[in-house]
Length: 388
Ligand code: NZQ
Ligand code: ZN
Image (cartoon, rainbow, N blue to C red; front, side):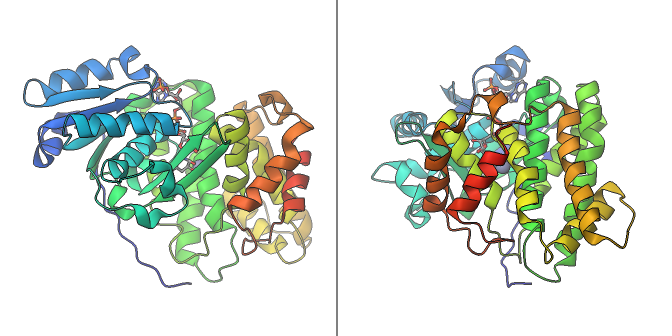
């Protein structure tokens, strides 16, 4: 296990009715609040009205609506201008990873004398930041409990991340009932994203990180157990609660600290989103089983077999390779059974730009130190295997 520095810096307020604590969560930071949100789901499900009434006349609320899934750098810049103009004290981010990530870039961008896109090539440019309070509305990214942010520049076809500990929300309100209205497609995407965050650290060459891997296995089992239940009955509170807490724990450092943390599937998926603006979790679900197959060899088979046993209850057998193949097939089938479109063709991606995206993947991130080293030709092979 490598050395690490772990801090869970976010105060998580979990459960029904925690919104009562919103005013007291914001108050220590000041009165001028920038309320950021997405394309309107919070207006349709009543959360917006609830927030406005809770804040009453005690706060000066300014708004940045319309944050896109795969949030754009232009929207970040709009938010920075609002923060400067209204002398914002705290950002209240209400939504999913896109809204929270965009708010993080705004938070740091407000004090940066340049284009916040610069953070994606040099996170040390992040200096002073505005505090963020988040209200999570979809279980997926873990952005509610980490300092990471992923921003998209459609003009240059780039989707890149940066992070700073100071950007982790100070407080995150996690009320599972806010996720009752998440549509099936986004519920599946969110669950696939949670699993992928676990896979990225679990399938790693770091030896003897049993604590991290055991937590990851428990969270994987949780996601497999509750996702079908949430898809069947979107208002199943226990299902939504377990998925929401799994989302936060899968990417708050708990399972990644002490590991190499070279993320292959995310690097590949970010290119798909940058070029085709597809839903992050769906892209991951499509790529992941193909990446697993590509990584399977005599050295890695034991880890896949162990995963199959601990997550899917596959019985141990003499043929480790066969067991590993079964584990990978179980992963594919789980996504398929949820209803995920499991080919790139189904999400509108054809062969034409695969080579370019493969080259960009490696340009943006070296995957030499991954579980199995991945070069441009490997990315292209994985993309091609995902086509149909
Ligand atoms: O925009 P609105 O109208 O709110 O609708 C959203 C959006 O269309 C909808 N939605 C969210 N909550 C809802 C709801 N619809 C009905 N009821 C609700 N309660 O869901 C759609 C997707 O929202 P989004 O915020 O984009 O989803 P997600 O949380 O999956 O975030 C994805 C973004 O986060 C990045 C991804 O790359 C992507 O840009 N990631 C961020 C990470 C991080 N900060 O740590 C790590 C991840 O790996 C990921 O890369
Ligand atoms: Zn992700």
